[in-house]
Image 1 (cartoon, rainbow, N blue to C red):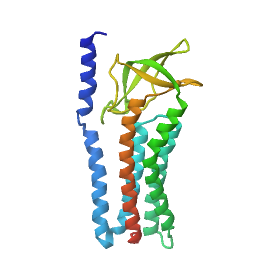
Image 2: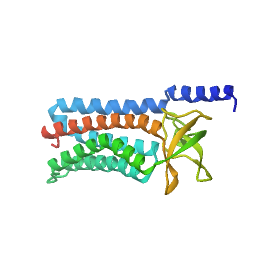
Image 3: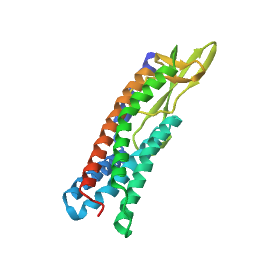
Image 4: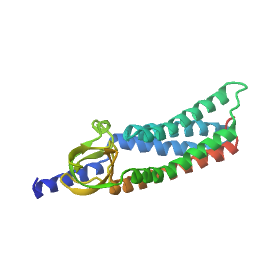
Length: 242
């Protein structure tokens, strides 16, 4: 690949994530709209009970969105499933409490679970980063040979990619990608960089530069979820269950 081809590839990857699709706009309208409904209903006593199901659907929706976007490994899937399960339980419990006579969910337990999920979201990237760093100890020189677009963004939504790398470890050539899609921190096709692989499983690799950039994003999401759980705690103290 010559330098002109590389430059075209770089420009293509840098420009495409900047195009705001209708799907991404709708996503942010839903997130911000849910927050607006929560705040508005929290200020109006007869409507406070609405805060809880809206919070639940927001947690479940965010968990589902990130699960679809980042189908990586078993531990990541379990992480997002927690958000989905807690969100669904919060949504269903709030509706049952409002419309089923005699049903009274344990509020302290609900608050504790929501706060726990928020804390987990903040510390998860650090745990995941350290896990990969300890597991992948062998340094290899790799080349990015392709940028694979997330299939879920083919017909809409933001465009995200995962790089495919080629490297040689103990005389064997590997071509691998980890199915973690993002818009940021991706190398360009033809770029050479250092990766770290697990000696017992050479197809399991650690891209330190890309993990740091994506980890910062997840920490910000965790802070967002922690703020959301804090808001849920406040509205629960105000007895919005009805």
